[in-house]
Image (cartoon, rainbow, N blue to C red; front, side, top):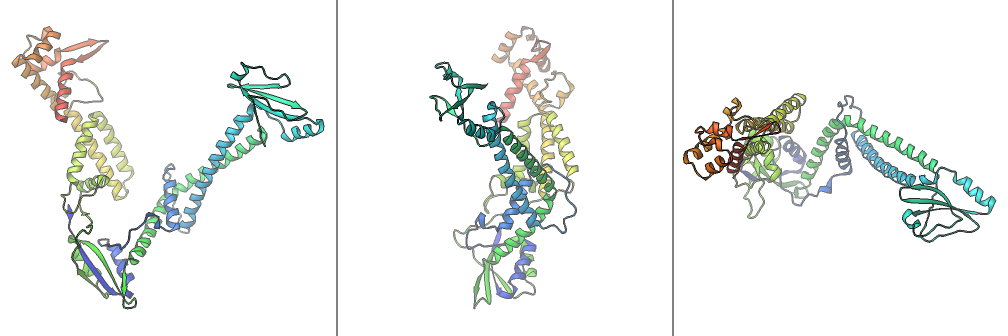
Length: 458
């Protein structure tokens, strides 16, 4: 349900400010008003590094949580993870460039560039490498002084040894600073470094829970500091004042919170046009529905709480979309396995698993009612059809057309003349079939089922 909130003004002595905010943070039912918009980039570097580290580790395979974390510095760990990820990205880009360069010069073969330069000095010749598309060579013959080295894909590679630097129309001269063997050694070193970085990140995945706990602690400190900065001070900083929202059903806890402090709380009027926060409080399945509501939009304070309606409506429409009892059974088995595996999961995860189980049950129920089992077409006289409301409606629809002898009945009997003497709806649906390739298709039953599904959907 949506609980109305009250606006309160808190004023008191500056020396009790820190104690007041710590108590308010522990109880968690006061939302202090901010005098300025909070920016997402306001987080300190240590918090940003921890958040980035958790995002990086969340993409790693799950491993058993580390046990010995007492002497571990969370700031250093988060910074190391971020730096390792940054280094890994640079290595991956370097590997990509090396692979491109290796593929570019590999057709020329492996040779020593220093020996080539030494040969040029001793022979007083210029050694150059050229490449050209094969299609261009069909139009004009390459010069005779060029030495053909190799053919790769649609390219031809040549070597030139001459007294001067040459250039040939249509050909591209190839320049490179490292030999093929040097590039391959660099590539092997980079690949080895990539493997080390990836291994380090996988090992650090054991500290996800440790970093999450540290992040929660640091966020509490940051939010406390941020809220403390929202107060206005008076009388040379000896007094402070700040406003906040309190849910109506939590007012009984306000004055015990102020006990022993030189702070006074007074309800004040809500200004016209002021944004009033929405406080929702639900239990059981309503709490799961509240999670779904927040995915779409938070209702206004004067709206009705749609959490329960959204939850059951979501379950019904999900079941109608899947429309298969078999898949519902698979979902249920998976949900039960996950529930057992994550028995100590946080509340949000437990609510998700509860939603998963309800969706599984709804798929099974709707699948039975709609006579859908992995898309398998059952015989109209199959005992499983007795539980299907869709099959029941299809029989009643057949009885209706048989009784009226209307246009639909005439169209069916034209295709299946042997049905003219049939007076039972179930028999009518059973005999209106086509056998092809060893498979039986109940044409009229399928048509009636589809029309009933359409009418329900509309």
